[in-house]
Length: 111
Image 1 (cartoon, helix red, strand yellow):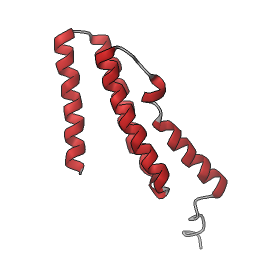
Image 2 (cartoon, rainbow, N blue to C red):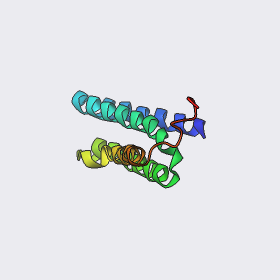
Image 3 (cartoon, helix red, strand yellow):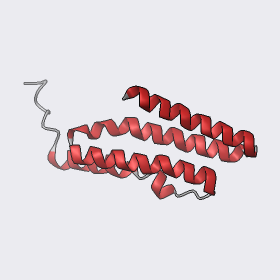
């Protein structure tokens, strides 16, 4: 599964650079690569939501939509920021749940 994810990232980067060689639009390349980097960062940060499985599944679904939003921007010139940064919602919900209920592991180290 990790190999498939690495191939997907490399394929996405390849599509970005092939599109750049076709259009020579450097501004669009930088915006799309920067947004793609943020989405990859949200994917890594979203691993904290693994304790709450439904929230983690929702995070994965929002990541797929955000990944698709990159291609919508690349090929259709539509930058839907609310789709691209939607995985932040699940991370925020998880942090709110942790704030309200606690982690359940507060006293495991100290006794």
